[in-house]
Length: 440
Ligand code: GAP
Image 1: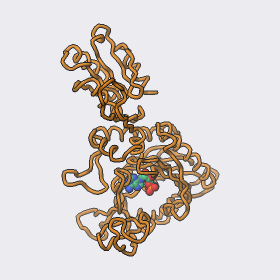
Image 2: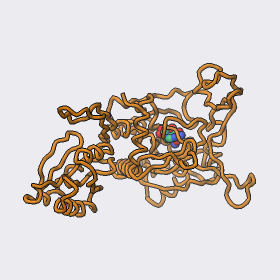
Image 3: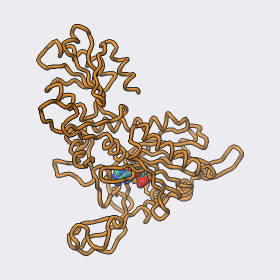
């Protein structure tokens, strides 16, 4: 059984995730990615970006602004009740809750009486310009896709796209969540990887099925265990205000099943509303003269939620350690079986012992020769076993050890994180060997 607290403490201890503003006691629902966290996040984003824009000929990229004219969010429905949660407040302890998370009619924290529910809009407000009046109010975007709809015509015309086609984007989104929880699962500042697929109305159902399959397959190719993934069809009364159909891809986190990605059939909601509100015609005309508002199939993944899914999936705690020695009672070992595409550091270069300059020199030369091609680190602090374990804990795929034989034979041992098997490889064959292994 994986324990959330151990996962959170590993993430902090090994420089993946820190609470934001920590020296000022933090800020609810906001976290920072540390050196290893940002490397993993970048790998995750790169894998998603490549799968969308390279593996699909007709998906192009975009990076639109976080700040938008507030008329956008009126047209999209985010300024109305559609993007609000029902908030309950305890009259006794003043704690606040989302109504749909409270079972019964008393405060889950202290048993006190609860207020009547009130609508609470989730958008974060700010002001643009020097005067903080009504006219200057702006909002931080609550989802990245609105910028895609605003650029529908720009992309269509400049890239000579033809329906069906998609636009992919990765970027920050903000929601003033009433109750951020489960570490980085529900945050107030987070990132989304969204793709909007524009198609003929008649083709929308088929493309919905197509993208559902593509996205589920992606998680499995990326190494998530099949038994930890499931798809939930969302009934009409629970769907987002823009969705005609919605499925959630859920992951089995240590705290239970939770949504990592939503796939939505948004119909003509977006382009039609933006046409009406902006006065700019966003319909599409086929070569045969047929004119319509393209329907949109959206795939929307949270960076943090998918990070947490990959991190939890890879996490393993081995009581007594993986290498059984005769007498010594060993403490538990932690292992991150991250897929090769995601691990922040792929290779560790290790001289067998520290106080032998010839070993250090050779190991340093190996490290210098690899570091521009691979994400690797040199480490000579502590016993070799301890260094292997430190590498295993952060998901390093291969540990290269320079020992005394290496000095005569110009070779080294390559230790595989998952099997702990070691094989001797000639140093001059290393780049080709590692490229092959890491591409697999
Ligand atoms: N454009 C569609 C959209 O935003 P959503 O279901 O509200 O749909 C999509 O969000 C994904 O964004 C979710 O599946 C989740 O991974 C992520 N997400 C949403 N709210 C989040 C939050 N408060 N913290 C972290 N991730 C969040």
